[in-house]
Image 1 (spheres, each protein chain N blue to C red):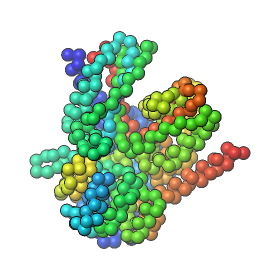
Image 2: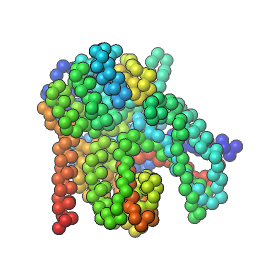
Image 3: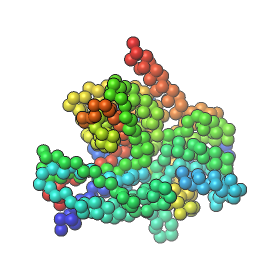
Image 4: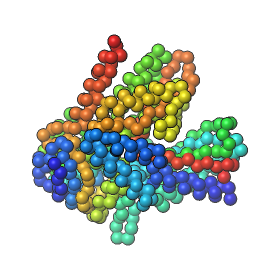
Length: 195
Length: 280
């Protein structure tokens, strides 16, 4: 199935592994340092300066430059989500419903998507120019002291995609399916070598 | 005068490397797209090819991770290799970082403070080798992103483990490929000293796609075929092509050692070679 989704959103339970998704609306970029700061605020019961209820999080750090009256995004492909495994719950517990990145999450972290009824979408790593072409504008930027890649960019996008649903709210994980097939190949390979 | 010419060549090298994917890599991606049978993989290869085309046309970086910029110098005969090259490369990186622009990636490793210039704390790095059979000097500008660098591997194996080479490579690809933006170019360094070994795997990646080692080319072929049988595919979501090519670079090593290094290069293999006749 192919879907056009508006974010923020309340419910993504209809999305299933293998579906193609195009995103319209707002996204927040968060990577390593922003996750750490968000978690640290949560531990002290302090609200971050942005609202993640129903939000779409994008694991990415853009190439951006200042222009009159704001910022231009030149390139904004996804980064490796797995680095954020231990801090994934910081965004999901804050209400994030969609997470866009690359590489996915391994068990047991992928189970958090089932627990929080959220969905993980894969976008093509490196396709920063294509991604940037769907950014309509930069609405705001938070935590610039972390540097351009690590800051939180609040962007508005139109037809961001194609994204592939790779971990759904039922707990299906496409990466795990692919990984297990490769593991089975290795099992046979090792058996053959022993003969 | 000589320094200024070199500086401009380096700036052009950075621009070309960042914005224009080498033709051998683009051709290999296009061939992978043509023969791909899995729907997600073909869709994503199509996005990659479109991205490559637009980056070149609009002179924008191929990938938002514009990497750490390194320079690999091969110094032959009749060339002047001199201390100022490091300063010129540094200045060229700073200039192009704001002109293209590039993403500022260089941070201090303990505090993670960003230099905002893509240089600093000893970067950029330059690697030099000498070759008497070469006339002039070749400088290759290589930006490498973190997705790719984070999957680098060096193992010091026992000399009687050479038969494990293929298994080591396959296991590493299974564990790391999905995080490294496949289709990959797999570079393998065998032998040498430990620090040389990692460099060999990096040089292996930089060889033209389709090129074969004179002695161990059939090993490169069989590894390529086996890696692609893993079915990891584009971005780790399944597909026929996990690697575009496999290259092995090997050197003599210590009788009691077997260093094996692996560099998993993402599809955005960026390199641009500058040839000069006399250091300027």
